[in-house]
Length: 483
Ligand SMILES: C[S@@+](CC[C@H](N)C(=O)[O-])C[C@H]1O[C@@H](n2cnc3c(N)ncnc32)[C@H](O)[C@@H]1O
Ligand code: SF4
Image (tube, rainbow, N blue to C red; front, top):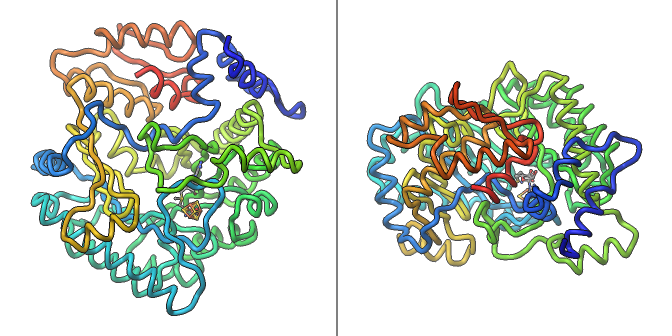
């Protein structure tokens, strides 16, 4: 066993004695699962982007592939990414652009990102002719923190997309923000513009944890956001929670859980603190500079000053507290990390993207957007200077693209389907890949190995493959190390 593995195992076994040890402890201790343990020791976002196996694909070829797939497509998922933030969180490696202050200069700077986004969208519409007529299943304004845009800019952005893309009566509009900018007035405006779904980055309801993370809001503001949004009457109010944050304890996460349940939030996204660069694996989109917490010397200095980084064991205890508590309160995890009240159902945009019978195209417009179709995928520039130069020059500002070989198309479809946490169906796989089965090699061998290690159950007689509870918890590690 390598020395580094000793340290990771020690971190896994360092649990909080006031709470039960996590159920995945035995699975992760098993030497047969060493690759999974190494993956979770320091993991990137693992289920946001599903990169191809043929690198250096021409972005213009991606646009052609996308256009071909859009002929007669089912509803697709459309994103508009606004990278502005009022502060930079110490854990965040997304491509963000800081806009400080409330004055006119700050409002003008934020509004310029709407100008660029609209101009970029016009370039996509020119280069991908079928995009204008593709039905939009969900339109998602995300970031960054789009809720800090001035009201006129928000109005302009949503109006532009509504008028230039094929929105129908069933198109859902989702808007993202943080508790300091999703104010009562902004919420009223969003409702007036037809937005029915909100996602708000709360991270924690513990003021000390928020402050150490560099967040510029309090737990009180998080609760005010939830109550204001409920008063205005949005269909879905989703909050992001993180676990594994500096000085966060299992008890603190339990209080977070109690608050979301008590306040009847319709959906919760629970994410482990990810510190490995998403750019290393291309499974997420990172900006051009690391988050402070990604720097080992910075982390060590905080530990030296007496702050506590939750151990791996504590992180899985936190996750278990969340899973058990949310399940008991009527929430269901689908896909991984996304818990929704049964009455509101799973996230539409995620199901368009990953459900085994859908996996339709998605188009993300804006700095660091990630777009994909069945043949290839592409990421938009993450460096804002290169991004704005491309848009000003009239080019769709894609930074890189990859293509999927036929084998990679199949493995990508399986990986996406696994992240839904729903049983994989061989009949759907055969329809999509004629002549291929989930019980053919190399999948047979892989699923058998997962079954032997207690991570999945494969039943050839019913043609179904289902993750076990441990497999569900470790699904990102499974797809990124074994498929
Ligand atoms: C781009 S932010 C959007 C919301 C808004 N900007 C905010 O932070 O309140 C989306 C979510 O990603 C999550 N996130 C960001 N960096 C992360 C990291 N390093 N590890 C895990 N989750 C992270 C946070 O939960 C955050 O709410
Ligand atoms: S977590 Fe949200 S608010 Fe914080 S820097 Fe990232 S995008 Fe901005």
